[in-house]
Length: 439
Ligand code: XUL
Ligand code: CO
Image 1: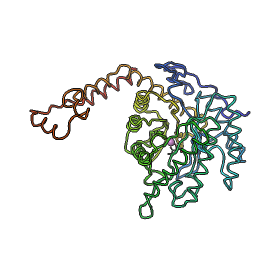
Image 2: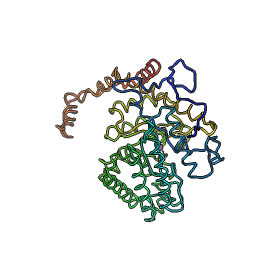
Image 3: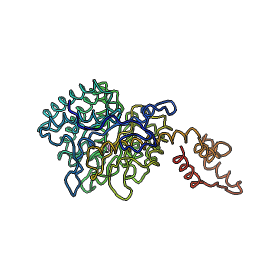
C-alpha cells in the first residue's frame, strides 16, 4: 500500500490557540453539541472530482496542481492510485464520507460495456478498501455532461439516443452507489438547460426530464436502493439557462410531475448565490418544503459571475447554514460535501489539507454559534413577536380561514389607523455579530 501524502499524519484537534495549519482549531469531532457529536452533526465529505481529479486548469492555462500520483500513466493504475489516495486523505483528515461521479473513479472506455467493466474493477477495489476503513460513501452521481455526446444535454437532449445513454449511465451509477452503501444519489442537471429558444422545445425537454427522473425512481425501487434521491439546483453554467434554476423552481417542477415525494435537495452555496439568493435562503426554501437533503459546502466570489467553488471560510455563511440545518432537525442521510477546489495558485498537495481544515473549522464554529443562537432563542422570540397580530383577532381569523375579502373590507372600514412596528434589522445583525464573536 503506497502512502501518497507523506509527512502528513492524522490531523488532530489542538484548539483555538494553536497556530499549526495542520491542526483543527474548532473542529473537535468528539465534542458534543446538544444531542450529537460534531462529527455526527456535520457529516463532512470529500468530493472526489475536485480533490483527486482537479488539475487547476482554467480557460487561460493548463493545470498547475502537483499531485503525488501525477507520474502514473496507465489510466486504470491511476484510477486505483486515486482510490488509495482518497482513503488515505479522508482517514488522515478524519472525514467520514466521500462523494463521486461515475467518471471520477474510472475512466471512460470506447463503449459502455467496456466502461462498465472498468467501473466494476474499481468498485471492487473501493469495496475492498472500505472493509478496513471507517470512510463511507455519502453519495454517488453520474457525469452526463463531460463527454461530447451530451453537447445538447442528457435527459433533455433532442436526441433520444442520448436520453437512452444517460439512462444506462444512471442505471449503472445507481447500482454501484448501492453496492458501496451510498446514502444518497444526486442529480445535478449538468447540461439540462438551453442556450436559445430558437432551437428548443422547452415543453418536451421538461417532460422528458420528468420521464427520466420517474424511471430513476422506478429503478431505485426495483433494485431496493434505499438511499435518498437528491436534486442539486443551479441557475446557469454550463448552459445559459439551467432547468433546475433554484430550489423553488425544482420544487415546482417536481410537483407538476408528481415527483415531490421522491426527491429532496442538495443545496450548494455557490449555486445559491449564482441564482441571486443567499445560501440561507435556499436552505430555508428547501426546509419549509420538507426537502432539505444535503449540502454541497463551498462559497462563491460575489464579484465574479461564475461558480468558483471556493472552500467555505465565511463564518456568517457557515453559521446561518448550520442555523437552518439545526432548525430543520439536522442531517439524516445528508451531510456537508466539500464541492470545493483549491485555488490554482494553491498547487501543493498539502494545500488540499489546509483547505479542508479551513472549511471544517469554519463549519464547526458555525455549528456552535448556531446552536447557541437557537438555545438562547432570541431571534425566534423576535420573530414570534413580530407576527403576533396573527395570533388573535382578525389575524387569527385570516389564518383559520374564517374571513374573506368582504369581511376584511368591513374590518378595515372600522379601523382607525394602521400601526406598524420596526423590523430592527440592524439590532439583529449586531446581535448576530455578537454571537459570532463571543460564542
Ligand atoms: C457543478 C456541481 C457538481 C455536482 C455533482 O456545479 O456542483 O459537481 O455537485 O455533479
Ligand atoms: Co455541487
